[in-house]
View 1 (tube, rainbow, N blue to C red):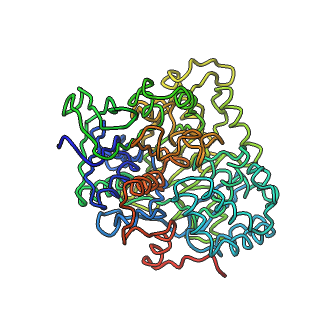
View 2 (cartoon, rainbow, N blue to C red):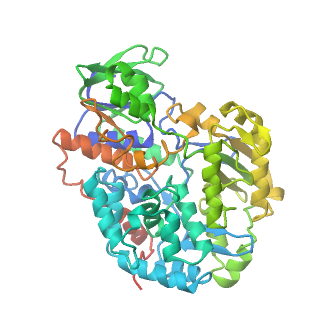
View 3 (tube, rainbow, N blue to C red):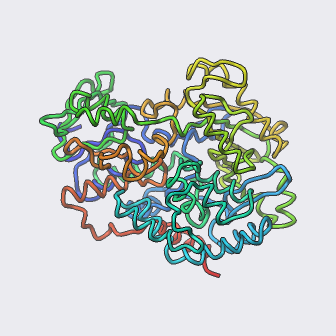
Length: 569
């Protein structure tokens, strides 16, 4: 370890590693300091039950192949990031025995699936796809991989405004308004709302909901979540290898206790005495980058004494609780057998059951989603559970994540963190999670059994992971958040983490933060945009290899793997 680097990165999460890897590839000296013994917090894969069953404790719908970093950092080509997905993708089972699903690269097959539920909606969807076919990469790139600013948002809005049947006032609509305008099937609407919530965007918020609906119209050919061979932790491993290859350094078990601020400028960090290198000062010749969320970054490390009253107030008002998940993991003696598989065998494709991966269940009417909004406001534990955070059948597409002949499954249910009631029972806030953990896990399992009855007979082991457990494992994820905080209007896109911050730049000179745009995820939007801002500010953005557009890496991955990505017919 040296005493001075060009750039110091606090936190070895995937977006911190991503930003650091870009800077290192540009020839800068970079060091990452991670408090845990392992990089990649919130992108973990562990054996928490019987040997051989791999549980992905957080990130699960892996979307890294959409990011420019997938190619620019050579994550697949050189550093071992082997991505996997089936031909069919996300699906939603219904109590009537039907299933609505999308195809991962063939838009025509998605339309065929939708037509089984509504021919009118399928035709509307076809028209939307035809419009977005030659615009979807540009749209996704501006939304995800351009530093958020009013001009980049205006570009996304310009593209969206030209969509067939798009109302002129769509920016003043919720996702409910826009979905009702376009579609008639409640099944399709609820499927789209599931996907929005799965990526941290609430359908009931004006503006946020409507742009979110446009983004997740194209779940499958657009935003697409697969898995990695062996589990999600392969993502940080590949980023770690990339960073080391390009000359960066990583120090684990090295918590940071303070950012050094001199005359309003970030100058370096002070390590915590409990870390393996003790109480040590590390200088940053150019800048400090924080991969922590806003309150740990500004309140704990910068210190209120170094913030203006306005910034202190804005950071103190940052909301973490709108996106919180309760997790069930199962080790299974056989794959889940959904009642709807008989319907897909007959009406869609018999191979679907072998590739089913990403699903949500239980919320079948668009009106059901407003119940979640009320539960957040009241601190009420949803009952029946609201399982719309994303659920995954890992071993269906990657058999290495379970012993031969066995299977795994995971569900994410949306819940408040600060739970105050469950029906007529009074609860005592976050500490009550330890008391209700297994009982609530039972309620989710019972709901799942309505759709896949063999969950009861196939279960070998179950592990319940509460929102309190998430914060215990990663203190930067306050209030049990998975996303870094919800996408409320005042902390979304160029207002994130708070209006006037200018993230990834901050009010502190030469301090950058990865809390950018919207939910933290394996899309690596936050790490990518932070790297762009730093490289622009310090004059090394112009690199011949730094020119990939978002989504294009996935389209090229499909081609390399014999899959014809298409939105044309």
